[in-house]
Image (cartoon, rainbow, N blue to C red; front, side, top):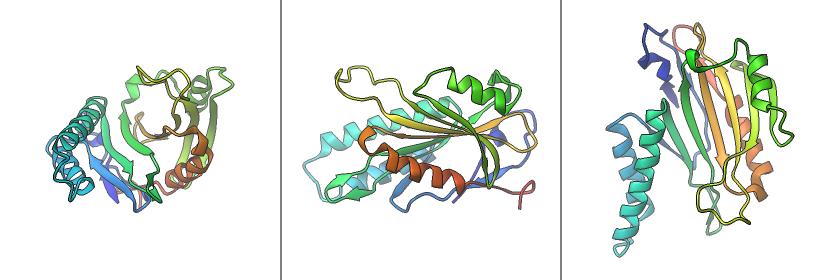
Length: 208
């Protein structure tokens, strides 16, 4: 599936760069632009609650949570959000991918090497490496996310994998942020996240 990088929407005169990204068939794509996100979220909620006529309150709550998440991501230069609907038996395997545009002037680093070093920050639980993807160089960071407010003390924080990709012809970055709230299966999901990142390709006038 092909989506314009948000660099297109930021002045001055960004290059017409697009990308394509292959995700599992069971992942649901939510474009974050106003209008598009509402239609996509409504379609997802109707699909997930199909045939549950007594679940109006739950549908309303889930729709509100998804829209709030989408709107917040968009305010922070989010482009699109993917949610895993993949299931093993009756259990849904929770995972997500948020694609975000990172303006170059907000990046406090002059090179990917420096970005990788800063991202690691000396934390032994953070893996930060330079990678060579088919699309080009990138910084990969595996980390633990901050616990959600109100989470029980004995619940482990979500596992996240971030990929920082330089946007061709600019100082800007595209950030692929993968996450799962289940550390017990994180290693298996991280392999999937890495495979999705390796499917990434720039397209359009600047790339074939």
